Image (cartoon, rainbow, N blue to C red; front, top):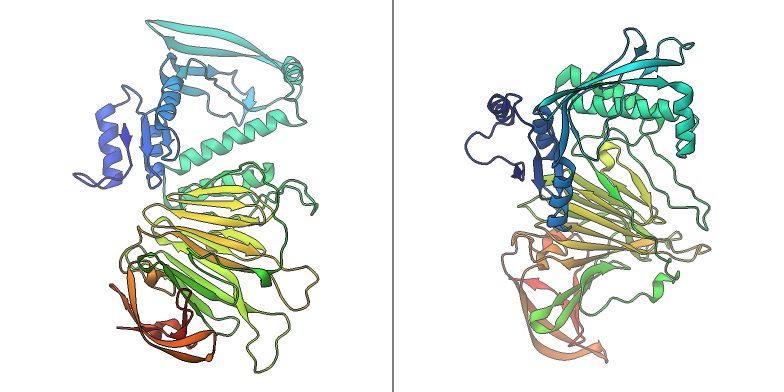
Length: 491
């Protein structure tokens, strides 16, 4: 079945859909689900497939769909056996993993693990029963502990506790599969068991998180696993973290020499806002004079709930009663539609901080994917956030000299693509996402001979909030084409 996993017509109650599918199939054949799109309800598809002896597969939008479909088909195209049952002598093994499987496909494998009940027993027999095409299949296997260890050593897989870890891995997967089908106390108990085993054996699962600190580099950091305390569960859809190749770090440069490009919309340095106006081949610039700790709304889309907020920081040493410059020291990006949250500081990048999500440093190179949102971290340089049916944004890391007694590291924020944001979008940057216009008149000499004064009236289509929403600071606008500075008025 090819689907996005989001029922919109007819029966839409998921529990009723699962029941209807079970009643229709009645175990006569397996159900394979292929889920398309970043917003696919994949948990729902997995449960449906598991209840009907099949499997589910994601089809990612940013990869070749044909290859993904062919790859999945090659896995299930040739079933060799059905109703496979591995039987062991009574009381010979304990804590056995799943030993009955509905299908066995060409090129696949079936692994069963357990603990030998009697430590003195080094071998025993296992009977395998199954059905092939038009006939029954049966065989008996001799399980010999020493032969198994020898075979694993020859294949280079013999870790000190390889078999025990294999048993733990299979057991955790089975607990997670059972957990998807139940609710309430039973689900909580299964989650607790899976989490405890994940922590005991160091496995990354949907109940734990991994923090990738980068390979041992000039900072001497090594990869570590960042495990939440027992009892904490990461809620929401499963996350996938893909690591890409490392790139050489950029040259460290002083933030004081930083200049904004001419054709961008963003905010950087002391927070200096620049708005590209393609209709007039010009750019508007303004500063916000606020105190450290103040949080500014940069982007807010009421239609989707997507938002970007920035918190200001100041210099390490400040002069009383004097504005010494403020910068963005923390950025928060949220997309409630997919339960996505990202907190960025000059030190760390935290995914879903409210639910104990993984923490990355700027020494990492990684691509993070979560239902409709892709975050690309470029080592010691920047990160890019791409939102389906939303926009694309860039956070730039600015690092000052380590020995500076005045300045501290800060962030810049840029808008790379905003054409899919709704017309109701507002915020210091968001209000300019859609066409604006302005008229210049009464150009006259100013106090600075190089910068004449002028009167400017601006027009913003569909603007929801006026200057009062911009905070207490005086809003100034500078046109690169005209070179004047004046108040920005909206009508």
